[in-house]
Length: 177
Image (cartoon, rainbow, N blue to C red; front, side, top):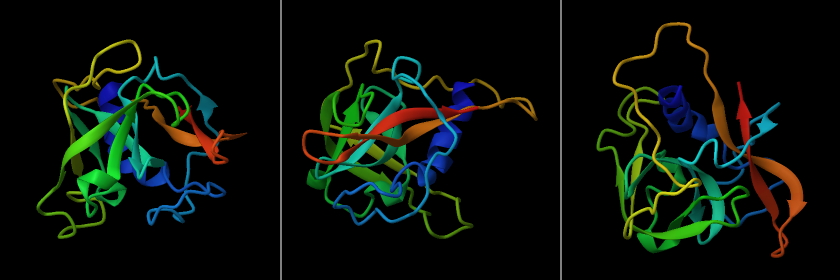
């Protein structure tokens, strides 16, 4: 099941950032997409999900794949300076949690050369290492492909309608089965 989540996170991240009505100063905003008809979930159920931030503002989702690497898509910061990007882990609402600075951004070398989603990967290396706990853990990757017609779950960030102390609408974790 987690394998499907990471694949859908990579592909589905394109629909988890830039939600309508979210006021953030980001060039990545205005995509007009989002997770719809989702149910609230907790970071403890999906501790591999992180918020990728541009100048400390939520931009999109990412997936923890190891002690120091996050997988996301190039639109989440692949053309930016590492000093502009940070990763927020262990967050239920894209505001709280542990913020990690970024050391390196690596876009797949063949990104943009194939079909729409071919090579659409951005690897983010954080400064230091993630400290595992109930809210921060890597996704478990399968040893084999899942069976055809397997059920899957997509999770990501969605607008919860509450306003943070900074005046921005918070993002909340949601899942769709």
